[in-house]
Length: 207
Image (cartoon, rainbow, N blue to C red; front, side):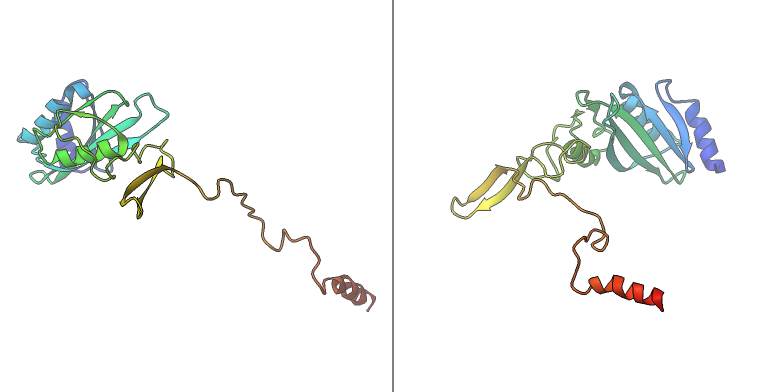
């Protein structure tokens, strides 16, 4: 841990709320926050003179289906003043809304739309929470671990009807039995000429 990271860690430890916890990973401070204190925490990180994390780099999501709060929302910030990055993590479930930070960082609107589109997490306070990367009428959220690889529908343009058609997924081959045995190990049929192998082996022994 560098001296600057140590100083920043000590400063944050004495100022953030009890609902937040700090740790250091690879010389980068990571704060785990509760939803109730998220906005106050991020506002502090942005406006405090010893922090000045006033650049939002990204907001991303992670899915842990085995957990009650399966989604982890990760905020990445940069401070040019202290030359440090910081991460803020928040756990949530499928039903609970996450406070939007668009009032603090207007660019967050794009990142929140992406997380909503790919994971289905709702951000309360974001008035433009439309899908961003998937198509109109897309069903489901493709970065959830339980999302099927085939998706739920197939989309194609029908020349006769002159419109886009949505259909259930139809696999041309629903079941395939893969045989990973080497073709030489798995071959039982005797090829022409193989019968001479044993004869030659006997002749070698007799010689």
